Every structure is written in structure tokens, then in C-alpha cells.
Length: 145
Image (cartoon, rainbow, N blue to C red; front, side):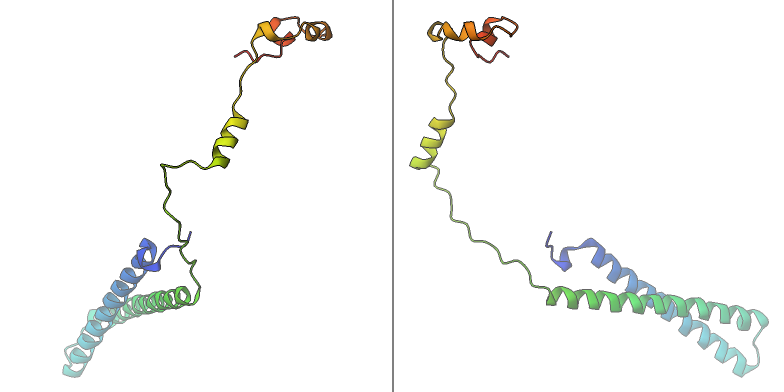
């Protein structure tokens, strides 16, 4: 199934979630590094700001890295989609429903099944059916449904 990449829900989820992850990660890193820098330079830093800040910077860096990898993956998918040749659409002539071709009429006539009435069946066929069940339908080769 050749589907446009821009119509794929998975592609858009990848792109949006990657952007969100990179944004949240960048926000966490920038906020915590800024807080730690200002409090350490002022001399007012507490253990919570320093040690918890370091942990939040690591979490933010992981989110930022995952977002960047996702964005790069979306760009790579777009490049691959651009390089893969797509199937060209086949131009189909409109169907003229008002005319029937001779081939179609002959094919319909050849495929039509006209059962032979039981009165026109030869009695010789009845004699050759000695091993069958003996029913009229079997002896006359008529399909019974």
C-alpha cells in the first residue's frame, strides 16, 4: 500500500512527540542549570537545589536526546520517501455502459446453462446407469438442488 507519508498518523505522532520531548527536555535542562548557576553564585544554594537539580538535568537531557533522535528519524523517513519511486497512476478510460461489445454477448451466451427437459432425454442413458442410485435426476443428469 503506497501511502503518502504526510497522511500517516504514525509519522505525525513521531514528529509531534519528538518535538514535545525535545521541548520539555530543553526546558528542564535550561531551567535547572539556570537555577543551579544563580544559587551557587549567590551562595544561597541548598542541597535540594544542587542535588535534585542535577537529577532533573539528567532527566531533561534524556528527554532532549530522545526528541532530537525522533526528529532526525522523521527527517530520514521523509528523505527515504522522497527517494523511493512511487507508482504512477494508471489512466483508465471511462466505461461506456450504453454499449455492449460482441465479445461480451458471445461469452454470456456460451456461459448460459439451459437444462434439457426430461422428456427430451434419451432412454439409452437410463440403461447405462445400472450402478447408480436409480433416481431420475441421476439417470437424466439433471442437477437437483
